[in-house]
Length: 323
Image (cartoon, rainbow, N blue to C red; front, side, top):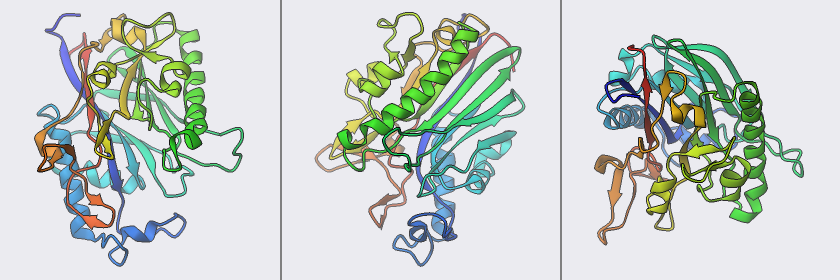
């Protein structure tokens, strides 16, 4: 596909606890995010957070994204507030969101410019863990859409965390991977060159079993028939990351595509070298010793006023059609 064809930025961003200031007593620990809570989360801090996130989305490509997925949002209202903020308000954004059964109210959302993307199907995949019948986590959002005359499937993920230990929580992420892979297999069985874009915070790296073996997301030169392509695997190999744990960068936030979308067989294309981590200086805090981490809103209960404890990831979707 020629470089003269239009490029449209698509982003995934774990926004670190985008919560309103109202105590939702149905959620575990929600009182933290109130003016009276440990975090002293008030309207001024909430508005600062919205402005920061709107700025971050602009930093990525110098323009507002065509679409973006989000993790760690409390409810639909906070996303509505975000898309009214700054330059984002100039887009005709619509929202896909479901209230998940996550105990802390950590939901995902997908935001898209309805002037250029037409929704055809919106649904969610509910993750269950065989040995933990009472375990609840975030749903996976699935939206089938049309961009011009071309169909595309978007999936937004926030897989179970490592909070209880990597090995102790591994089966939960394997369950998420199996849930997503089953849905993708159905799509590829129906249309072998289907355009599929998977985004999310997977709480696993590209070489973990859940991603590489179950989801079958691999490097461009590793895949076989039916495999997906992890567009950020080279950045992972080079030691880059999207979030920091114990002063080490990890790449939990990833962009994964089908072979059909990579090869551009139906008017839409993502180039393999065209996905990146938004490692902008504004989004990063640098320690005196030269180490760095994302510029977070909080460190524990201490307010720093930054953007998020994750960096956004993005790609440019190329289209044969002008829009």
